[in-house]
Amino acid sequence: MKVRILGCSGGIGGAARTTSMLVDDDVLIDAGTGVGDLGFDEMCRIDHVFLTHSHLDHIALLPLLVDSVGSLRDVPITVHALAQTIDSLQQHIFNWEIWPDFTRIPDADHPFLRFQPIAHGAAVTLAGRVFTPLPADHAVPAVGYRIDSGAGSLAFSGDSSGSDTFWEAVNGIENLRYLIVETAFCERERHIAIASKHLCPSMLAHELGKLKHPVEVFVTHLKPGESELTMREIDSCAAAWRPRMLQNNDIFEI
Image (cartoon, rainbow, N blue to C red; front, top):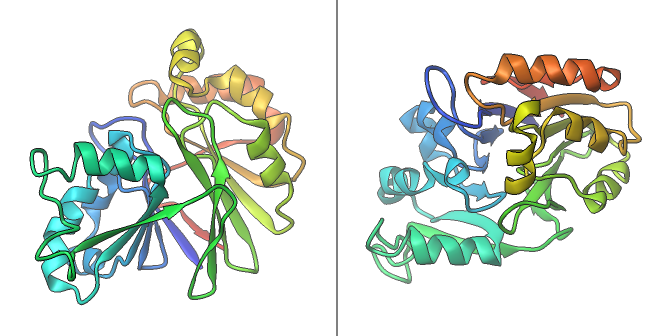
C-alpha cells in the first residue's frame, strides 16, 4: 500500500496545500486543496473519501471533485465520515445554496455522491486495506485514522488537541510504522491552539510522551509563514522523538 501526501499545510499560499492523502490510487483521506494537484484521470479513479471532520481546509475540494468527475463514473464516490460531519456537509455545503446536492444528481437512485457513516474503532476494509477511525479531540466532532495494509500501519491524528484514548489506540497497534500528528501553531500562539483545540510544540511534546512505540514521527498542519519557527520549537522540546516536517508528495510504503 502506498500513501502519498497531496497536502499537509494549515493554510494556503505558494506551494502550501491543505490536508489530503491519496492511498494507492482510489482512496482519499480528507479532501483539502491538495486534491487540486491531481490529474483528471487520477481524480476519476477515486472511489472513497475518508473525512476526519467538517472544517473547510479538510473538505474544500470535495464539492469540486464530485462535480468534476461524477458524470464520468459508473458508481458514486463514497464519503466515509462521522454522522455529525455528514450532517454538516448536507446542511451547509450540499444544500443547493452553496453547492448542488449530488446525493440526488442525476437522481436519488443514481447519485454522484453517497455518504457512509463511520464510528470510532469501527474498521472499514477495502480490498484488504483496513481504515479504522481513531479518537480525536477537536472543536467539532472529529477522528484520526489508522491505515493498515496488514504488513504495516500508519496512524494519522487528524486535527486534535491530544487525547488519551487516541494514544491508547495508537499504542495498541503492533505493526505501527509511521505516525503523522498535527501541530498547527507556534509557541507564542499557544492560547490560540488551546482555544481551537490544536497543538503547539510544547503540547506536542507532552502528547508524544504518551507514545510507547519507536516509530517515525511526522508533523503536519503547520501554518504557512510559521513552519520553520514551529519546527525549530519542536526540535527544542520534542527532539527525543526526532519528528520531521511532513511535505507535499512524501510517500509512505506500508
